[in-house]
Amino acid sequence: MKKILLTLSLLLSLNLGLVACSAPVEEKKETASESTQAEKMKLQVDGNDIKTDENGIFKITGKSTPNAIISIDQPAKKVTADAEGKFELEGQIPSEKSHEVKILAQKDSLEELEKSLTITPHDEYVQKVLAKKEQEEKEIRAKAEAVQTADSLIAKAKASLNPTDLAKARTYINENQYLAIQGYSAQLTQINDAITAKQDQIAQDKAKKAAEAKKAEEDRKQAERKPSSGNTVPSQGNKQQPPAPDKNQQTVLITATGSKYHVRKCGNGTYYTATLAEAKSKNLSPCSKCY
Picture 1 (tube, rainbow, N blue to C red):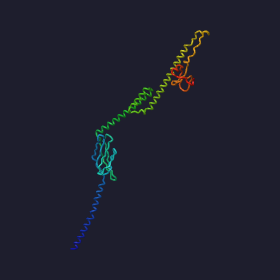
Picture 2 (cartoon, one colour; picture 1 turned 90 degrees about the vertical axis):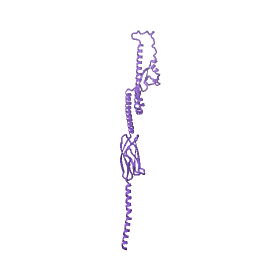
Picture 3 (cartoon, rainbow, N blue to C red; picture 1 turned 90 degrees about the horizontal axis):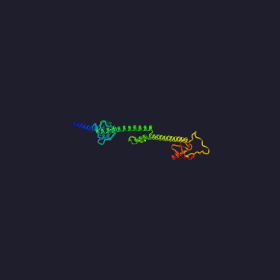
Picture 4 (cartoon, helix red, strand yellow; picture 1 turned 180 degrees about the vertical axis):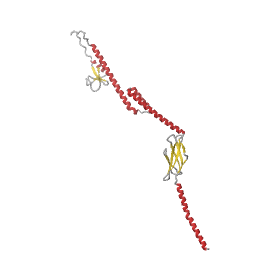
């Protein structure tokens, strides 16, 4: 009887020991499983279709793994989820059309998660974008027309060398909001110089013609004053002395722009013949080198 009781006691002790040894192993397995499950990346978005406000601004909210980096590609934005995993992304769509964006969750060495979202613009925002595009296109056309008109006016002034045409081109460029006078200054200056040269040449030609006409008139009058060959030569006693030559009818040389009159060419330039009286009428003074 004692042997039977002893045997039962030993068996009971062995069973209790086995139970005590096996309990920590099961608890350890459960802890490892929970740890593996906590390390998985999560990404939950509040809705797959996002709509903007009237200014094209959108907001994406959701929940992910705490402190994970949440980002989208178009437009490029990123935020960090808070300690509870909550996040909010805000941005503005680049056009008036709906487009798809990809949202990505990242954290350390955890596997990345990605989802696709569709962002739809508000109707009012669509109208704003289209109106802005139309205005930009209108300004592009207006600038092109302004440049074309300016080029046409400059070409006309260059061909005519007329001061009025040049003034029209300069005024149009100055007053047009799409043009800058600096971009045309070289062309305008070149035309102005050509007009000045043309006017100087016209003045010189006019002065030359006037001098030649006056000389011809003087020669005609002088020829009229000479006695004809048929007249009887007066006797020596009655012969009259010829009048003294008029110094004011003396021939001198002048230039179109000079302030002196000369008896010979004095330096470079184009010289024209004139009478001394004509030179004085122009308030010209004698050249110190010639007199």
